Length: 328
Image 1 (tube, rainbow, N blue to C red):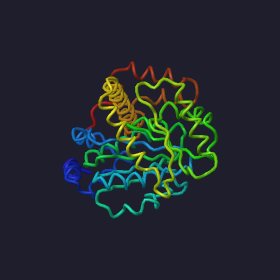
Image 2: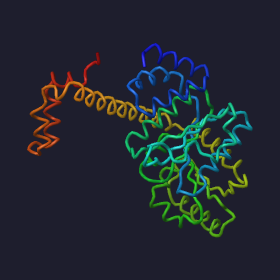
Image 3: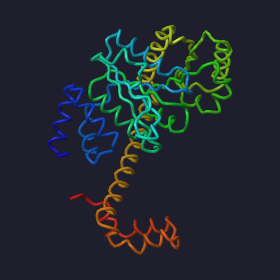
């Protein structure tokens, strides 16, 4: 795609053209070469949306919670973006659950934009693609971005670190609160939701979580533990209120600015990592080994270890410049 066409696409997206937003999201998901230019262009239009991460074990009702929260936000005339991180189809690489059939009530609502993001077996790149999707929705003008993950593995925890407020959804069948602690959820949760509260064990899990949270430092924020029956739209207003209260807390938290500085620095390192890797791979594919054939052959043969080879490349300024220098 030419620079002029990319710029035109961004301009249309900033004017709230949904088709342009969808096309830009496809470029983001495919990690297109135009990605750095696109994100640089939209960055100045971001920073207004509140990002809410929703995670928890499979079957906990995350999609139903997201659907209900969307309804609550739309009732308050808030524009909502939803990024649903789905498992990949082993055949197509696409998202198995598509655009979340369970959210179909919002498909025709112009104030809601839903996009599924396939994991495609990826780990490190998933968080970066999700962050870029969030930025596009932010620039598009939504008030809140809901990020729903497929589970509570390491990849999902990494994605959740992109959120301003993390909602952890649990059900009584998920096990006791000790399992919650082992999964690392106490460290990332800002709001706990015990869903399907009509089932046996819900009150016990609620009590255990409250007791465990009393034993850990609060850091100024008291994590609420809420009971819901999302399928019946019960308790969702309390979840929305807790999210809004946490947003207000962040605005007044003196440590929030420091966390944002660290987050931006981490983003810079992520972008550098991805862009350098892309350039090196592209140059090697386009120009062969570009003088690195003996070293690459030695690495492939196992006579030189990758660490030594990497240091030799990094310390050879002309070779490094050819690999990562400005693209023609």
